Length: 272
Image (cartoon, rainbow, N blue to C red; front, side):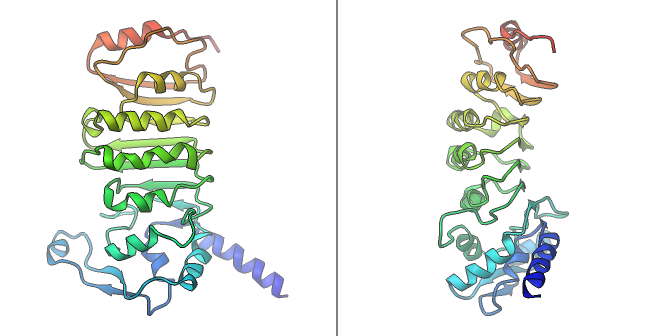
């Protein structure tokens, strides 16, 4: 009977915690003497962001972490929620974000996470985002409304290819033109990360360098690609056939027709 009850509890928690739209839910499962709710700045209240913030009253202990992982291990999806806080971080105090970014053992906060939608690609949340990268991750979407992502923040992307070997879908979107979203160093970092991805089926991202583009052209799994080509983009040699052999949708944003022409001339598609 105890084994049956334990199995039932595990299955029930899998259902209850399958989808997470706010980290505050996990914080609320921790001991009551660890956290409290504080009112936030009056300006945030007036702007309808959030009128409360979860903060810690003391450091997290190993027992606290055991409780946290008891529930986080059942989460499969961290999704977009309705409102201002897509991933439910705006109502977390800085001390909570720092604590969750530094668990007692190096490993993902949500070990069986498969889908992650993230709208806070800034330095403040970079370490927390890194702790969500896990080998089980299949879909990753990073979005920002209008901010520019310089190289100090984009360095978190370097670990995607190695930390998420099963990644099939990567979408990096921004309200600003992709050409303004990454600086030159950031573009190089993202390109190096893409070079480590070998199971991609769908990729939407800012500009990549020539080496990363060639790598993508050789992926037999890639069926959808949308990216920007910088004005100085140029391939030194023809793409070996079948370039993009499994592609169904190919979207290239270019600043001039000459760049697009040079790419199309280098492609050698094989009929499928």
